Amino acid sequence: MRRNHGTTKKRLIIAVAFLLAMIACTVAFAEGEEAGSNLYGTFWSLLPPIIAIGLALITKEVYTSLFVGIVVGCVLQNITPNGFSLEHSVTGIFEMMTAKLGDGWNVGILIFLVILGIMVSLMNKAGGSASFGKWAANKIKTRAGAQLATVALGCLIFIDDYFNCLTVGSVMLPVTDKHKISRAKLSYIIDATAAPVCIIAPISSWAAAVTSSVPDGSSINGFVMFLETIPYNFYALLTITMMITLALLDFDFGPMKIHEDNAKFRGDLFTTAARPYGEAMDDEQTHYKGKVIDLVLPVIVLIAACVCGMIYTGGFFHGEANFVDAFANSDASVGLVLGSFIALLFCFPFFLCRKVLNFKEFTDSIAEGFKAMVPAILILTFAWTLSGVTNALGSDDFVKSIVGNSHNSPLLPTILFLIGCGISFATGTSWGTFGILIPIVVNIFPDEISQMMCITIAACLGGAVMGDHCSPISDTTIMASTGGKSDHINHVSTQLPYACLVAAVCLVFYAIASVVQSVIVTPFAIAAMVGILFLMKKLQEKKAPSKSKKA
Image (tube, rainbow, N blue to C red; front, side, top):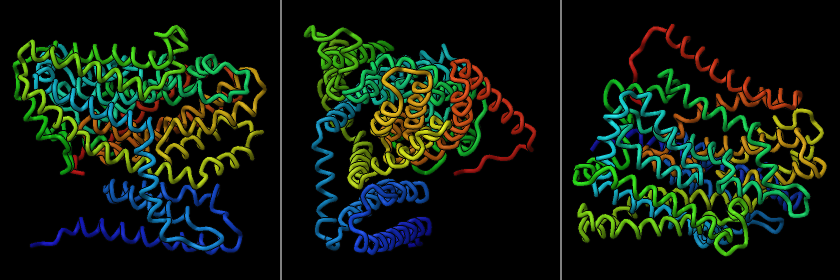
């Protein structure tokens, strides 16, 4: 048998990276013996996610890369002035993983994922997805129309990013496949209409998270503050602008262009050999007994039930809060589980009464839906564990020390945007990022909402979303690739240049906004984004056409 040199190379890279990480840990150990437990709250706290992300992008082996990062983190965590404990390093891996899997919020998200996976399987088996694809093919005639329809649906489902990722993917997949839009591009659109839309939607789980990040002792009204930041959230606004402009110009660049050219000219939606769910989707969509209603009605029920579930957890139905306050105080994890379970209960009699599924097909979908979500669940588990290890090393204190030294700078919004990008990228959590940064900003400014405060907090929020958008270990990124049925690393590598371009424009306009301190800057930022993309398209057209290569 011939040896697989690609696999051997990946293993060699992982082995070398792991060895270098252990050497770094040894150096840190030497420092720790001399100066005490000085690893906590230092740059060393960011080493585990840096290793995991770097390995994932180089080797395209997500599970192994995340596990290596976790191991390195646990080793660093157990370097103390009294020596190094191998026993605690090993047991710490599984203790942290068990703690994350035992966390109520995380368990709720996993249950929500499984139920949505079951519903997607049911809608596919019933023929709802295939029927919707046929209907949409008659209504949507162009690739641009298919992309814009996906963007529009993503913007309409603004309640929660997890809900957005999986729902938009299941609904629009037949349409984008019909118009030969690559799975990487679909996953990008899903991801770019998840967190960026939720972070500027007043009624969403993200608005609740931002509101709750304001310190209890502050006189600042968290919800009012959130509303004031929306016009200055350049990353969210420019990301939406970019998606629409790219669709209208029929323009792509970087690795995404390779994927899109392969889809358009060769009919290859995946480009690489990794094509998750490809065969399963083909098998499921051969069922044509269903109608469009078999997809549309369950999705409507799902949306309505999730809204009701979230405001229920916020005390709306008990008379404890009005609608807006109920959203601000909601437990999104529990609310989404309740809503999705109600929708699943609705699907059982609905599909059986319509005779598009029998009882055995319904029960078979439960196992199939769960199985489809296993890759996402495994990656999420590793990502949560890595995030927990990173936090245990004091990454938040390290960031606070950096911000504390720059709070008097006139470029504070720009600095915090970059810091937000870095934390979120390294930890894979945007909520955790602005949970760290917002209290710092509130303490810097007086107890009143000013223009500069809103610009700075908007920069924190935008940076958190940008880092989350790019990070291979972000739960939203993982679910976007799951919703778009794309290989995870393909999604990350194709999305990264797009997110970085938007971030570069944001840096310029946050510097301008800190001087002007007016929303008049926002239209100019949007115009600049459109102009840059138009210029890039013209420059690309001037170059000699070249054949697309397989990634």
